Image (cartoon, rainbow, N blue to C red; front, side, top):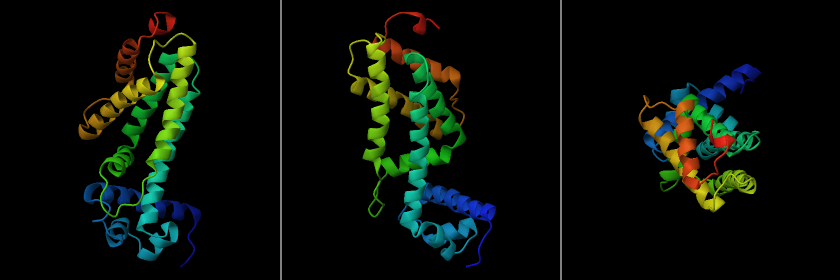
Amino acid sequence: MPRLKAPDQQDVQHRIRAEAIQLFCAKGYVATSVNDIVRAAGVTKPVLYYYFGSKAGLFDALLGDAFLSLQRLTQEAAEHPGGLRARLLDLVERNFAFCNQHPEQLRFILYALFAPEQGIPEVRFPEFHRFNAGIFVRILDEAHAQGELGPASPEEAGLHFIGAMHMMLVKRLREPDYTLDRAAAERLVDRYIQGVGIKAGEETSR
């Protein structure tokens, strides 16, 4: 195989990834053939095998990239300075921005997690969930220690928040006109904070 220049390699891989995500979400993993992917991407089978090894390897690479992106933004939100409201708002805004900028990548994650089918490669969701849940519980634990969080289990409170945020992300994927902006993020966070019983103070008065 002739060697490609670095920019060409990146472009080829990007095309393969982009077309594969579209096809996996539209047709399903099993129904999507390698021929479908290479035809859509304008490459040959040896090129796909060179970069990803197999269709399963491509699927795993796509999911790994998506999980890594979400883990990175969750970690960055955990390091955000300020109280509970500021940190949760940062987390929501980052997730909203990811959904607005990369809707197909998020749709692919949801497909892989909630639409399993016979023959689909193993999804390493437990590892991803433990990482995200661990960071979120840390945020709530620190808020509880600072007297910002009422008498609620951090694990359960975390599930409530993540569930509400994810439903808004799903609505955006289903309804492109649905707006995920800072105002929407603030509404979600403030309603959540009121529900978990944050103590009144400067942080909630903004």
